[in-house]
Length: 85
Image (cartoon, rainbow, N blue to C red; front, top):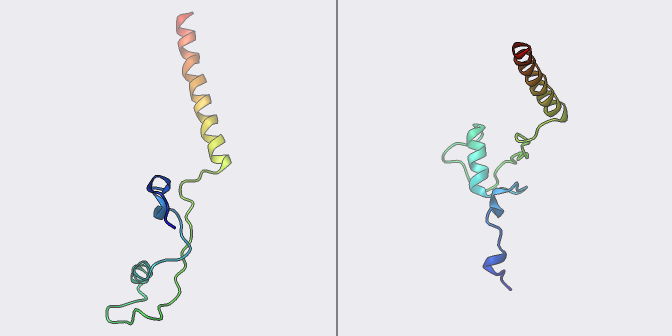
């Protein structure tokens, strides 16, 4: 049974996968300099494929950034009030 095209997810392969294809494993091994041209593509070494969290922000960083913006805004408003008086 097949899935209707309207139900397919556009970026299904762009998400994190635990299992890499042979080509992806070879690319990873080349980057790590653990595979050279002419080596057998059968029986490849294991490759650690970790999910990166580069887009995440820690709660402390988010609170710290908001707090700094609030202080700067208050300092900027204070001199204008003094000039008006």
